[in-house]
Image (cartoon, rainbow, N blue to C red; front, side):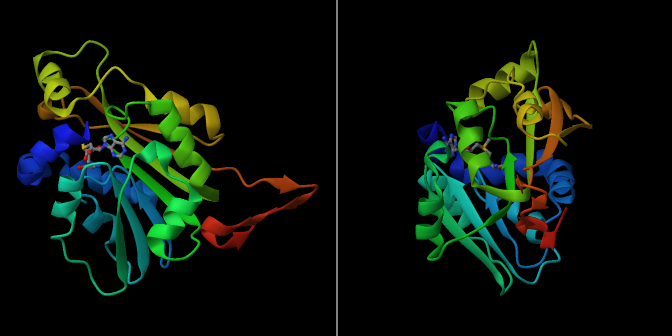
Length: 225
Ligand SMILES: C[S@@+](CC[C@H](N)C(=O)[O-])C[C@H]1O[C@@H](n2cnc3c(N)ncnc32)[C@H](O)[C@@H]1O
């Protein structure tokens, strides 16, 4: 898969920017990152979502993970305001650990938000990858997953599947509803170029309770319970 995207990298943004502009904005609104948070964007690709994810923030750390070195080279061409620290990380998303994130950032990190845009249809092991990501999310932290779904892809869906190496039949939102009690699925306005329906799912990692006392909800910076 990364090899496929290595070949795409040079023209990925020009081809897809208009196709997903509205959906990137919708995903950023659902993710709702706050000042000073640590965001994990995976797969980040060329970092096409990062401007909108960090818009309005004066300080944030974004760990931008992708398996394709060529896609990450496109990300390196982007400029971000001072205070927005973007840490590119070439890695298989399924293999990410707290230790690999800490090594990339240079310090232990607590991941407040995870953004998975057009990843679940291309990950080789979708469930294993989502489980690895979920384990990295802080209690109280939020994940937003966006992808395309087509039970029986038409011609455009089959073109997307072929070009993107994607399986549009996957229903990753069902994985999120199985782990996040507050999971919610939003069906966005599809465009013909998407090749199917487009959905955004949100979920919060529950805050574990010890006796009657809730642990600190680090991702929202408040104590609950
Ligand atoms: C359709 S692109 C989406 C990129 C970006 N999220 C966007 O919205 O433009 C899919 C990306 O997934 C990456 N990818 C595929 N499998 C991966 C994996 N196991 N770990 C990390 N990245 C992966 C590819 O290299 C590619 O950049």
